Length: 531
Image (cartoon, rainbow, N blue to C red):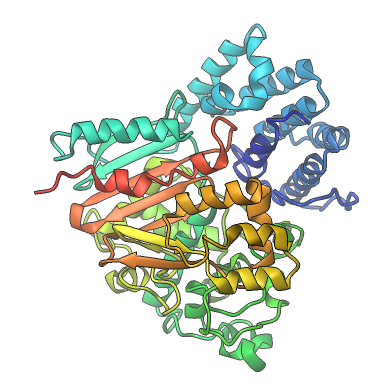
């Protein structure tokens, strides 16, 4: 495996260009399963097997799987894109180039990946590579028109919008330096600008920012009378949960990360399962619901099942009809698990400027072009105040944004890591950090230096998974955001009538901590000059 391959593989698995790719981080390739009768399921599971094989370093096996898909009639851009990476993994650059050509021929429309992905560096010296980039750019421009991307937004200059032009220039430069794929700014409901840093607009995986959109589905169902409120027990839709602690879990607990459902800090085990909803249903509730905050990907996947049972539609179809279509958003894709459930924890892919339209809808208190789409009361419930007493930044799958928010490594976290086998030699290096409030980026830098990089931080978080970092804030919330891994961010600032979106794909240009773009909130809030 080339040294720069890991992050592009994450891109391949979590942020594929055109179709869903499941199981992005499974550690080993499972034995091939019988081909499902449904062609879409066949393609999905074939890509899953190939992705797992590549993650385990079995690039020959991955390439063979992808060739079977291709020869079996699945001649799509994402299969070709996968095959290019599998070919890179075995050192066959010529084959990788050929697969990229096939991907572009079949509509691959992300010139930014071709320009920036570090793993593709050897191919950029080959004759014809610039032509591939140009064709991908043409594909992207055609896809924008066909997908109605950004339609309905009037454009204005920064000066007309009342923004500081120097602050905006600094923000755009910082976004580029942070490895961003896109930055979008709306003020007073008008488009100030969209920047793609050498590429063009494309659907980007929003990662955990997906959760905030899932929360809107619950509000829509309440407005339709298909849910009485967020306090409906999960057992209303899954009767097997009527017994014990499970019977106490409500939708509000799931939305506020206080369900008490047993889960790991990472989602690796989830991606190994076939049915994400059933995997959550089969887990134990280990804490009294409401008693503690624990960021819970597994529990969030339950909401996909709830939406389907309450509405009679899959989560993605329901939100396309009730949310995206009224906003004029057409080019959306939602990743599914192997049995066809849309993910609740992640998986929504859309264009950054269309994601900004979702934020503008909330800023406009649920109306769009004079039409009521979403309840103002539900927006308030999700975004106006902490949803539980344990974490002041957590709303209902949305995050409250403050002028100052600090993280604290507590002694309880260190003790939990010690009980779970974290070496004392590592923990002793953290003694002067315990109990000290720090900006999140600063704390991560300190932990990285003390624990030997990201591997050490991951070990600490895994060993202390049930005891999260504490959060301290100052003042009242300034706004709210949806956010996900790799720095996927949608920020809404009502007092400034401002919406900002930043999205990124992990292409290896910058380290992961830089890609998270910790200065984003401060830079966005500086765009509107103080009176």
